Length: 282
Ligand code: NAP
Image (tube, rainbow, N blue to C red; front, side):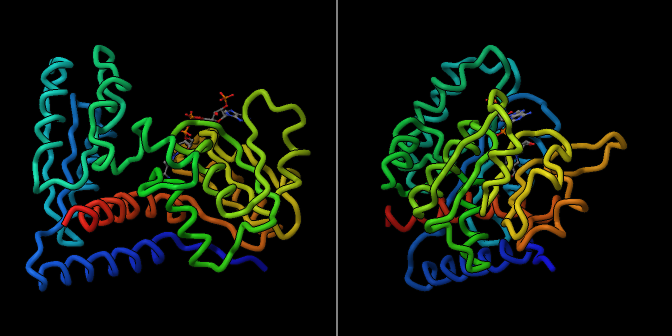
């Protein structure tokens, strides 16, 4: 018998506490936290993500500013906007929606964000702080997974934790957060030999590879906790994860579904990081 980890419910509960913190700030005469999101171009998926972030800000009572720039925006124009927002006292978090059009260099734009307002935690300074285990913001998806583990009383301490995927936004920071929580951490990737042998060692298995239902039941240890980060489409165009949920779930103690698992936590952690930033500023 397994427990389905409910990211919708956990995210909603956390957003309620964020909303209460905003109300408390208002009652104390402080300003509401402010998030600025910059989107360049017309990528339809990015537009949906930005709209969702705006709605989430409204739900918790944040100031939300969305800057929709044309795909012909130059690097210097974009940097100018980032620098204006760095100086803007109403804004606690700055997020540049990725991917950017190819003529814009993502690394050099992210580098211009004031690390204290880098609520995505993609700036090298914040990446380094996560590495040192001494951070104010962690990247939203791994941070959301740590919140889910906490909500379900799952401690990584002393456990075999396997992270499949080594991207800068999910796999690597996930491994660092599990390590900081005293897990024994292995990172696997596309060059890992005998992947199933590695994943079968996991007490906690986090999968972030972007391949529909890639993790099958024979790759999972009996009683494991399985966290599925994937947001994939199957052959029928249906949203699914990197884990073959129906086959794997009966072997698990806990498992996240897709949708409704990790996804709802990501935006919630963006709000939390913005609140943390606001609290440190005033
Ligand atoms: P990514 O940058 O494409 O990285 C994928 C990683 O998976 C790479 O490290 C790659 O290894 C590894 N990989 C690919 N095929 C593999 C295989 N056959 N065996 C083992 N490892 C393999 O992806 P990402 O940005 O981390 O995202 C991963 C998934 O999570 C995607 O489905 C994405 O949509 C989803 N996602 C969801 C959320 C959310 O909020 N729910 C947030 C972010 C991402 P190499 O490094 O060797 O190439």
